[in-house]
Image 1 (cartoon, rainbow, N blue to C red):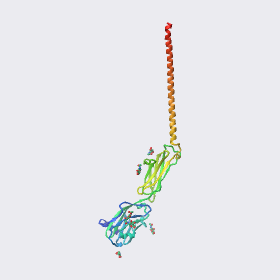
Image 2: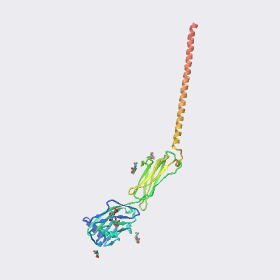
Image 3: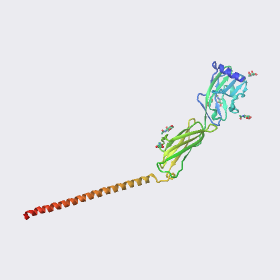
Image 4: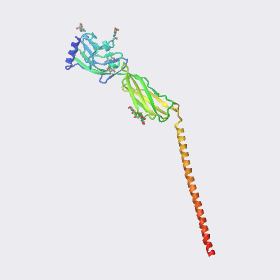
Length: 298
Ligand SMILES: *[C@@H]1O[C@H](CO)[C@@H](O)[C@H](O)[C@H]1NC(C)=O
Ligand SMILES: *[C@@H]1O[C@H](CO)[C@@H](O)[C@H](O)[C@H]1NC(C)=O
Ligand SMILES: *[C@@H]1O[C@H](CO)[C@@H](O)[C@H](O)[C@H]1NC(C)=O
Ligand SMILES: *[C@@H]1O[C@H](CO)[C@@H](O)[C@H](O)[C@H]1NC(C)=O
Ligand SMILES: *[C@@H]1O[C@H](CO)[C@@H](O)[C@H](O)[C@H]1NC(C)=O
Ligand SMILES: *[C@@H]1O[C@H](CO)[C@@H](O)[C@H](O)[C@H]1NC(C)=O
């Protein structure tokens, strides 16, 4: 009877004149919460409920989600995964409201649902159900190795769990610049389909720098945010200022020594030159005196 009804509905679908309306935008439902899949139909001003048939099915697999005919629910053919989780709004049926209440939504419920309605005519429409779950607040940890030196590579790990769907993970430095290089993010689904994420950022160690990890759920928007600041306390080395001072001092010293050496050589050279000049002058003088003396001799 049910399968006959379904095939009859399918067959006449092409000739449908009944208007069936569902949301055009995907319906977003929170994991573990109840969701209403809206479906409304045009109907004669007065009709007998025993003439109404409603059939909700999964669009892709055509498995039965919920069925109503002859004035009552007909759940013999219902897919097991929907057992005890579906109902129609009985007081609303006569008003053209064939919406389905789906309780305790699961990740596995995500997909397309078709609402078939028949009173005198047939009509159908499909909607898409998207499931969302917020992530736990992310936690950022840094690998605690006390022998770190500036210039070493350091791994920062951001962890969050229990969310859906896969988030966008954004690492930023204190300048709010997006760091996309050297980031590795992995997602693991648990038996409920909810994801745990582990994102690892590798940075070259600098003291006093802040790194933040932010999660964006594509359906729920911005979620958690966590950051870590690497201070001198994390790292066993003096602050950069000291290194710079020591470095500059060493440079200066080397420069002074070099300068001194050059000066010494220059001084020595000029001294020798002076002495040589003095000697030459003396010799010249002696020669002159010799020459001067010559006439006396001759
Ligand atoms: C269902 O329909 C009602 C009435 O048209 C509307 O207020 C509500 O927002 C709809 N819900 C969804 C999930 O589309
Ligand atoms: C159908 O009825 C339910 C229960 O009153 C309501 O939440 C829902 O918005 C209604 N849907 C439409 C399309 O009117
Ligand atoms: C609705 O239909 C049933 C079965 O055909 C019939 O017994 C009942 O009297 C009808 N009710 C109305 C209000 O027409
Ligand atoms: C549905 O509810 C009935 C009655 O409460 C229970 O016997 C049955 O085990 C439930 N089925 C599922 C799949 O939970
Ligand atoms: C960082 O990435 C996010 C998401 O891709 C984007 O919205 C934001 O504008 C980016 N910020 C910068 C500074 O590039
Ligand atoms: C990424 O890591 C490489 C070495 O593994 C490093 O040379 C490079 O500077 C890093 N990039 C950024 C943006 O930190």
